[in-house]
Length: 199
Image (cartoon, rainbow, N blue to C red; front, side):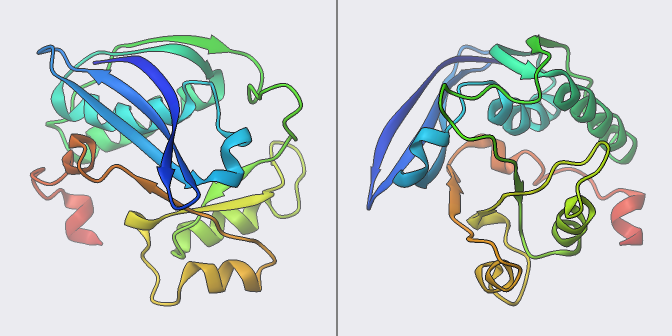
């Protein structure tokens, strides 16, 4: 699996998409996108960060190598590799994914003039609150969370996350991802694991 092209394109209703063309091992191609409010276009990354996060689980499910020809943070790669190791313990049918990525040493690669900010995904669930509160005070190894991002397809709370975010002093711009893409079905037919049974 290879990310072969990325681009920013208008999505209508004052929104833009960060789109990536992906080629699978069988030569099929597919466009996968992340959609955000147009006001956030200057903040869209030119790194491989969103692509490795979105494509690594799919590569593990399909048993494919993953090549991303954009810089990716060393810590992100290390953490994703560890996450995949844990998933493979729960779901033995997942494959190890050989990565072909360019490691960058900086915590983030931003466009010139872009403000230094840190965002966290927020679904309204326990893990989202843990991440937010764990980093709230900063400190060694902690980044202050400046922004929260909601992925519409991943909202788990009964109270709208926008309401929770506002009560915590955050604006919550909704981000959509391409729900037609194969990546969202990557987990649908995995057998239940002992971890699922215990949940």
